[in-house]
Amino acid sequence: MKEFLESFNTLALIVYLTCMLVFISITNNPIVQIIFFVSLCLLIFFADKKTFINALIVSAFIGIPIMIINPIVNSRGATVLLRLSEVPALGDIKITLECLAFALVLMLKLVNTVLMFIFFNLCAEPDKIFNLMAIAAPRSAITAALTAKMIPNMVESTKRIAEIQMTRGAQLKSKNLIKKVTTGWRFIKILLFLNLEGSLQTAEALESKGYGASKRRKHYDERFRVRDFLIAFSGIMVVFMVILKYSRDILAFKFFPRLGFFINGRIGAYIILGLLPILIGLPVILGWGVNKCRFLKRII
Image (cartoon, rainbow, N blue to C red):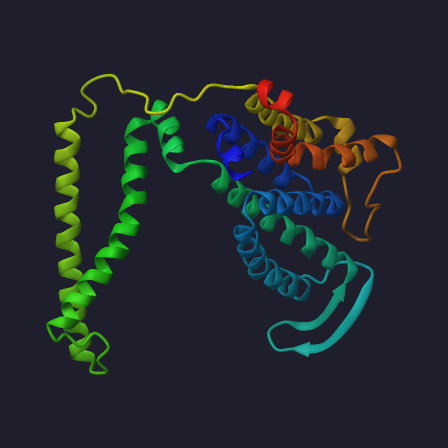
């Protein structure tokens, strides 16, 4: 499945990601946000099970503080569930049902945004992203590529410098403050000189290859296929759900002073809620269809 997801056109993935993020940021309906969360979890699960476990851990670290802090700080709402005695610097605290629902939506919005980027990271290769970025902004692309490369190089250089300094008798974990400062200063100087030397070598390599002297060449020939049009279309359709007035009325939700109806009684609400998981999970649905059906594999 992961190989199929990596076969998507990078521009189509960016359109899909952007549209989904727009929908996440605008929609306040808890049911819709929950559907989005479940759909994204399934996407990541089918793409990479190990990443799915890590994504759940990250979601817990992000979501739990929001669910705890927001109802304590925000006391709006008419349906009081719990009253706490006066707390220093906060005063009387009342936890309301409306604040819990509002905190849930805030949590899901943030978690869904993070999960969306995790899924995008599984599908898109960094080299292809930089290659696409270089079409519009070549200098920014090369700067971003070198910055991304610099961070792991610095980590590796730091390990090697520490090992060399320890073999020479340097006490990196000394309790003496003066020794710590002296050793740390030497450490920083060596790391700085190594990075400066590396930047000069990179500049010489770029100059020797004639970077910027002629029209840039494409390292990846990414063509739009049927699968790319489909996921881009699914993202655009999700955005239309927010833009169209009919859909906005259905997906609208009121928190204060009392909670509104989670789902509008009209048939359109159920149609939208039924289409939403399909549009979000379309990349995995296409991957499943290609693996099961030879005809789909040919046309998609």
